[in-house]
Image (cartoon, rainbow, N blue to C red; front, top):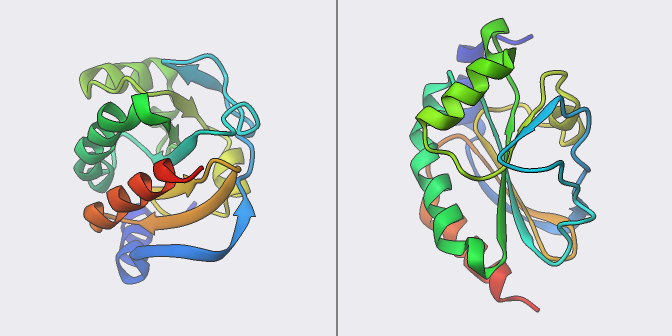
Length: 167
């Protein structure tokens, strides 16, 4: 496994947002050990919704910095069709512990669904390499926007609004 500081350095070098010209279907949630705040979800059942897949881990300072934005988007847009799914993919052994994760979810006031991806199956399905990482999925089930690292919050929110407005 890569050292977090190297991953974060790479994330900031590569940080940024991109809209995909040729949208690819969003991978299914794979190998999820547990779901918190939700019954198990699938991309298939989320069709017709805009989905923000947020790869994070609770001990990551950068993930902690983006959390207020993610929670805000969830609160602001959940009734308009946005579904936020936090995919918790741990780096350290203690982050794999379900009770530790539940405590972190409660401590941080996270009310959106959290998928525990201890085996990196969903992480790998998305070919993800960074914490935090956002993948926005349109109503047709395609990944149309990505952002790695902190920042570009206004652009991410504008994209959420644009996707929610689409038929």
